[in-house]
Image 1 (cartoon, helix red, strand yellow):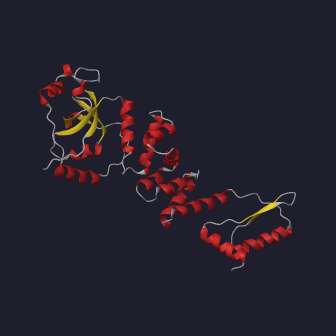
Image 2 (cartoon, one colour; image 1 turned 60 degrees about the vertical axis):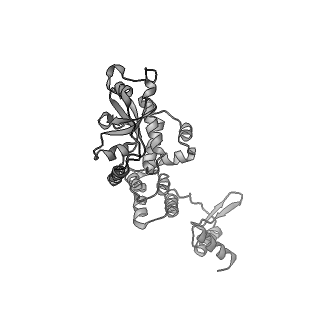
Image 3 (cartoon, rainbow, N blue to C red; image 1 turned 135 degrees about the vertical axis):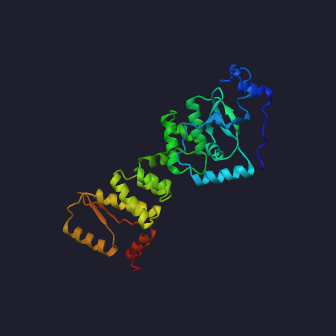
Length: 297
């Protein structure tokens, strides 16, 4: 097996520090802390535990097997990051996929970058590190943002700076958590996109969310089509109050609706001033209406 990572020898001094409880290092102020903390060393796999704060909830088994095969052929290219939690005890901050991948191999050690961190710091580092990964699904990212806000006590403004994203982007991800769990699963499994999810988040009624979600999946609706569908449903649910228009206006309204084939609205004030509203769902419908008005049809 060709190892891409050059194995680092512990040496007698560092080996003694790691194996002698009397010389155990638990803070950066301890003697010889500089020999361990902030360095990359080969740690025994059986001394490392997974992070209970791990924000990733979906580990694809097939991807883990592929990574395991790659490590078997090329070695571990990138060390994991751990924090020291006790004598011969470490906890993963980042790199759990790599750690899982080597569990089926006969490796006894893994290169690890050692840090000292409390629970909150470990959570924050794990969350921020995972957010930067490209293969997180939108719901996982939203959950990471939520945990940073609730458990690390960050405001949305501070969070946006910490992760290098616009505040509006952070807000859009967080809105996905308002969706029914079935729809969230649909986003995670790729049945609908984040754009669909953002549109559905504007629908407050969960039953309506699910009905529209089923329509999106069954009819393969685009994001724009989904937005139009939601807009039309909301107009039906919250119709404008009917006005008692004079008979001549009623006649004109019926004519316009029939001629333009859309739901024209006429608003009339007491001083006989008012507006005529002609809605359209897309640019093609807009052009069709303009042609009719201009007499081209």
